[in-house]
Structures are given as structure tokens and as C-alpha cells.
Image (cartoon, rainbow, N blue to C red; front, side, top):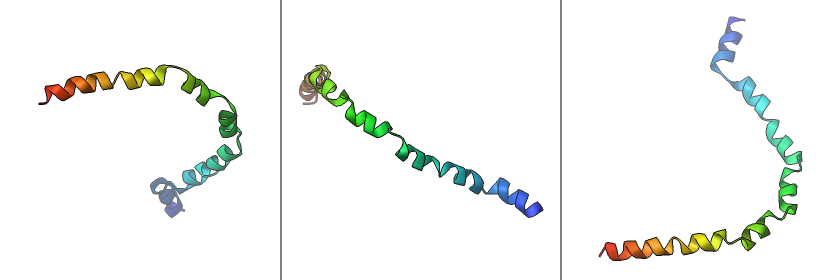
Length: 69
């Protein structure tokens, strides 16, 4: 009996088994399909945040290039 108590304290095997069934539940949930069916990607593409970001980095990069030489 004393061996069992020491094993439980030193070896976290029981908790691991409890967390195992968690991954399968995620697969059964319709979370991924919902995100795919939603139109979030197209909205991001149509928004002007991506182009703005790309135009921002080029400016600072150019400034740093002449500074190095």
C-alpha cells in the first residue's frame, strides 16, 4: 500500500491518462470547420493592413542600408 502512494506522488501517470481524452474531443468539435466556412481570410486580404505593413518595412530598411556603408 505504501508503494502505491509513493508511486502516485512520484509518477504523474494518472493525470496524463485524464488529459489524453481531451485531444479527441477537439477533433469532434466543429470549431475548425466553422473557422474555414467563415469569411475571415478574404476580409483580411481586402483590408489595407497587409499592403501598409509591406510599405512600412521597406522605408526603414532603405535607411539602414546607407547607414551601414
